[in-house]
Image (tube, rainbow, N blue to C red; front, side, top):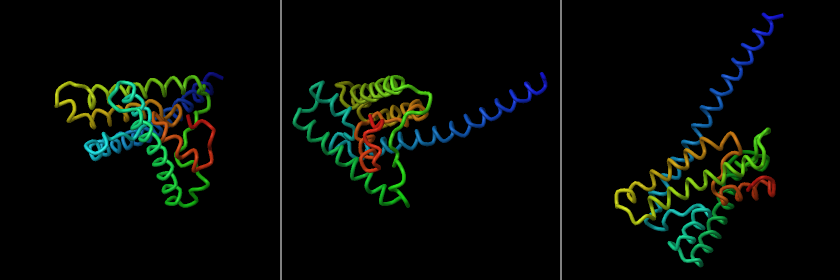
Length: 190
């Protein structure tokens, strides 16, 4: 009857709203944590290594001539080794870590591979463009001094969008390290 349909609809909408509230809060918190971590790391290491933690950014820097090819290859290898070592430390820290994915990426049910790939390409491009236009740009010194903040916000935005889609990567090393250590390789590490 109409009353049951209305009650079921109201119950479904209430449950959906609670899911959004719970997942939204979790997602924003995780996105903020990623963005803040990258901001801190970029401020802390920018003067030493350019703050390069991401092979996609390293590749872009090599493409625009801001980084020699040999250095880009060495940085990328180091980034991947660092991600594997970091994942191994996480595995050693978490009780029963070997039974977990360690943050390996996976595509949410109902989301297609093409959707996830498109999202990763677009948000990685946003990150790379932010790096190129702030940290690398020949523009004014103000944009360079605030580059880590802008980069952190780009990472935050990417995670806010992609966490519910595929766990957000935008960093090949960040996806590869946990996938190798947790044994979810080859899976959807890409």
